Image 1 (cartoon, rainbow, N blue to C red):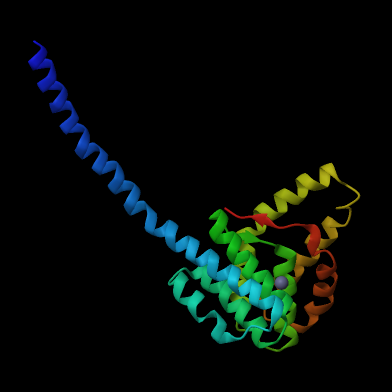
Image 2: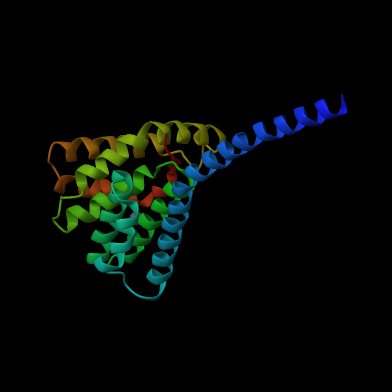
Length: 205
Ligand SMILES: [Zn+2]
């Protein structure tokens, strides 16, 4: 009997080995994205550090561009960061890199609707409309959640968000104008919107 129990125990142990290998395999093959995610986060952090000591240039982003490969959301943030670097508006380079960092860190796309409109204002002022469509896409991705969140904040802090209806109306009018190709008349609205871009960012769906 003792020998039978022992043999059965050994047999069970042999069954455990492929199970362990399977678990290790699943873990191993789930990791490359995790490792590349950490590399991307490190590369973004390095660029953010560099941006504090010197203006970034297009070539600074080549490694990061290679890291993110075909991720259109990530490439959008890099395109925007490069544009602001090219125009020596370093503060918005940092915003785009921070948004990209959050996108990889949280796995969700953060959309600051008023702030994205502020970026559009700079594109219009420099008479370069190439990045406006992708910025409008980003706004449309985050708009609903941003709007709902501000409504919640507004109920809790009505004084802080007392102008939200006016702000959102100006944002809607601005987006509508831009979609129709009416860029210059929107700049006054964008100046107003820019003053209130603290009204909130959201982590999008
Ligand atoms: Zn910005």
